[in-house]
Length: 438
Image (cartoon, rainbow, N blue to C red):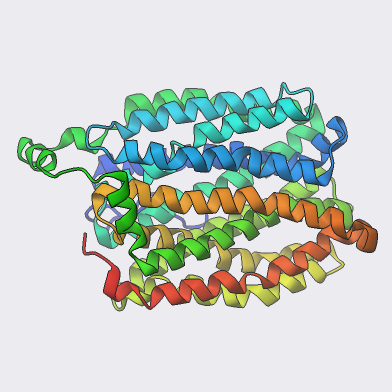
């Protein structure tokens, strides 16, 4: 078996065995697109404190910018765009390229905002653009790789989450300290427009490469209506359990991504550069390793027993909770950062297994819609509620906890990680009966 070159720390694209060179190129380009996706989405986390000081915002307004401003439109547009992506005549590559150009341009526009309302509207634009990316990407990947490599391939794409977050923290923190938060936003937004051209001219839509017989067969299949697709998706109890688990993971993950940085700045006295570099180790390197490891574990042990596709995420999140609590409790910031590494690895392992299972729980004509519903839950509930709820709770606790209000909120968030652990475990018990073969 020939491996592709490693990305970082031994992380590599799915092996060449059963995967064409064109497909491997597609996976690498989609990974870079998703890195830009999360870089543009999450850079506001490291810039939150300087934005707050410059525009005179409250913690609640910060949470609104990081969460609902982006998530509501992302989630609401995700399902109709996914329905479009699932249509046999849709060029998913073109859809991804257009989406990338829109969200990149709007990220740069965020740097021009002069008040809360303008920044809010620009963040809405980022959400509108990003809604067209991941459902189409998951559908492309599932159509292009063997089913036994699906979890690893989707996990490889999912590396964009921690790597994009890592780059956002580093670039945002350093550029902010030198040039300010506005330049940081413009600097990360502009290159995405050029990347959109690469996507458009290098990637190929596999639907257009089908043989005449395959095209005739595809056209003979009656497309699912939206109602039929939704009924099929929600008839799966495993899907519902995974959706609940992933949504809670997102509430906690997005909330911690924003407020853990503020916690290190406020409670430990770090600068934005120090906080960005420290969290880059945790959210970036540890998150990337966890995402990769989760996909590998699922592909290795899932064939032996389908429930093991989700065993590692379920038990890993249960183990992570007490370690995470102790990390927030520590007074030495170096010890605190070190203690967040293992929980981040364990909490990141769900992406490939969860989304891989979702693609296998429905027929191909409903795959993008299934992914979009997962993203609906993760973004409308997770990103929409997480940062905002954490900010509201921090403001509410300030009369009691003062400067340590964010720490208190994070204490609770650590133990709430037991909830998705439970639902991933429940979902794993249903996989043998519900997973489809293709």
